[in-house]
Image 1 (cartoon, one colour):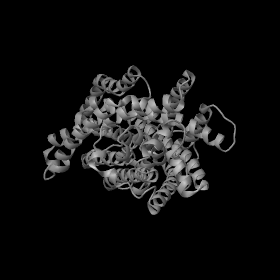
Image 2 (tube, helix red, strand yellow):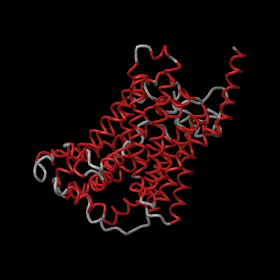
Image 3 (tube, helix red, strand yellow):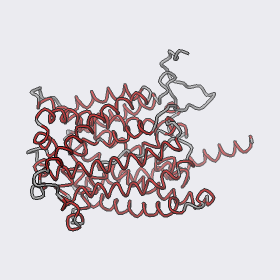
Image 4 (cartoon, helix red, strand yellow):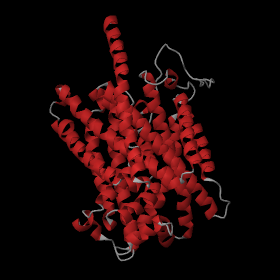
Length: 488
């Protein structure tokens, strides 16, 4: 059979539009890790964690963040078979706590992902211009590169998700390969003076800067919930989603920790903090300078190029996640019905993808016209907003897991650990993380206390707005359920 030639959207009322696909564990893990942007995190977050955090103990911060997320994932994937739609945190919270809280979670997710997407566009603009000028090209205003990237993302986001998966997979393999090569080179040669085993001593791990290290580690995991967002496009989602979730968090956490330890080892215990600080001062680059010393100038230049592909893969992943959030909310009647249509040729939420592109373009244009710095002003502040939002979402989701299984004891029978213990432990861990994020928020945003406070309140405000508007949404659900009962 030939594929339909129409490029329009399917607006037939005969049956609800639904996304389809055969994504396996590997493809989903690729997209989740790509959203985490490993090379970007190692090049940016690691120096921040080392210089502003607990120094040589920073690698343990990534392990602690991964541990909290793995505990969270236990309840998250245990509830997966009981959540029948691809809405990730929104769907989980709705199932456990009702539509009011669910709509609040949806609004927080839209804010968080839009913020980090816009932030990465800003980072991309700066990094692309830096790369061009490094190789002798002209200096161009960063918004030019940002909007060019947005145009490419718009084309890929309009088409079927499997095309994006292939693009993300290629970019991810390359950036991980070059970073693994650097890690191996550092540990094989012993670094400056052998592996820095003092990284794991209690005095370094539990120093006052641990909170800063955990904070920047958490920002590196943003996007891992995408495993559940793609459930409609996954092959056997009941098995694929849990496996992809555990694999993604474990791979990201171990990779970050090892790479951070490699950079510390390359600099040496005594010089790790000064080297990282020079990166923050713009006098060097901890990751690229280490690559030049251990891999040579050629691979150092390759890594510089791959930083661009890392950022691109990251922003493409966030774009796909946002489009699917809008698609699901449209089917719930919360957003306009047009956003719930699929393209009959590409079987993708193409309308939602176009709207998401337009939304990001408007926000980025405003920030550019205000004259904000692309790194501190755009990326820093937007990453801060997103981090607050994601910690809030995970905390509420863990509460939803506990409540759901308390109301459905048959579903929890014989499974106390994944349905009760793990979610409660996750709540406590996430609350601790929330305190760490808030108490160190100015380090992420780069702004004043007043500006940082306003930005930190954006996600909670979005949640409250959802709770308020959720009353109308609840009535809509009740009406639909009543109608179904009458028909039955």
